[in-house]
Amino acid sequence: MLTMAKLKVPIICVVIGEGSSGGALALGVGDRIVMLENAVYSILSPEGFASILYKDASKSQEAAEKMKMTAKDLQNLKVIDKIVNEPENGVQEETIQEVAQELKKYFIKEIKQLQKKEENTLLEERYQKFRKIGTM
Image (tube, rainbow, N blue to C red):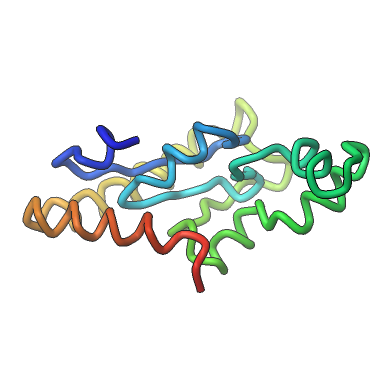
């Protein structure tokens, strides 16, 4: 994560399914974090959280609700920057192109904006963004 945080190029991270554990921590280093609408993102699985909080992994549904791990929850908490809408039945082989096109548009727009920043500014903003995760 430290090496990634020091990269002098823009970083855009995408959660397309389930981002959890150490991988989720690394995604938090991105200059921009985007999630598919039905994806989930957390540093611990609901089962793991339930085992710690309730001493009962079977309470994972209750734990998941408390964890605020949906795209909408995380955007409200300012953990992620954008939600990419998915077709009603989720991304399937026949709909992947439309979702990919929406991601492509977002990448192009954001990379153009991020490339305008001086390296020191980019790194400082990335650091501050990461430090603010979990604060309100």
